[in-house]
Image 1 (cartoon, helix red, strand yellow):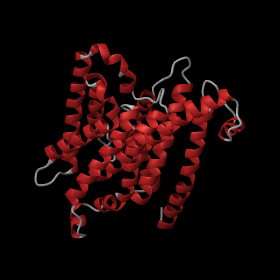
Image 2 (cartoon, rainbow, N blue to C red):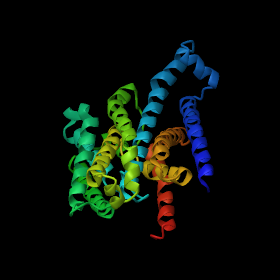
Image 3 (cartoon, rainbow, N blue to C red):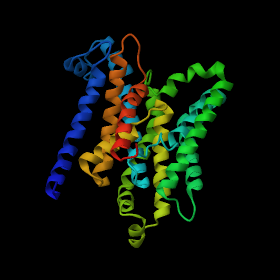
Length: 331
């Protein structure tokens, strides 16, 4: 593919992605146990719809769709940044332990210190942040290579999983309340949850725009970036910390939703290339669309139960992960 063809494809993707997100958002708002038509949804937004429809749309589905959008956007942005920092398309907040750190902090707030549950987003970010710093410190030896970071992250991920399981056994009488959260889901998410996570998510997504230039420079390789006057180790650490903020914001409300940060950036990379001017915004939009679509299918297609979206995404993401491993000759 020549340069003009690649540029044309990127422009088409930039046009198609927001349209796709709007279509998926409408699908999430209109479709469910009570399905509504376009006209019925429109009448609700113009304040002239029936009270029953208004309750369904404004109180149940719109906040859930918006939370899903922010969750998917944060996870995809975190995955895209980590894959660039690690120079590895298999990197993901869940795989290297960042999500597990945020998850452990959130679980402690919910079952060990429930009086601190109002600080859940901040604690989830703090847990992800501390985990990132520990991983980076373990990988540091006159520099932190991407391979060392991934290996340290996998080990920390296993350790945090063991601690989480230990807490669940110790506080077995309180586990029932966090099981849906551990599976990853958006059931019952309301305007309160949106207000809960929005400041952290929006801040992280805004900062990710500023990360486009350093992420592109890191793609050149450490030596080339240093020749251009970049502080490679500092930039790598800052991008990992930003990924922690994004992952922590998503985990605090949606629970341990996996594979979004792996699947979406890799798919966008195949379509649009490595340039973060296109990769990052398209990943954000693609992640938002994927989570909303998956959540709508999960809550609507398994009647009479509502399947947590994290389970559905894991069912889709695990085969894709194996495909990536096979394609790269790892398995």
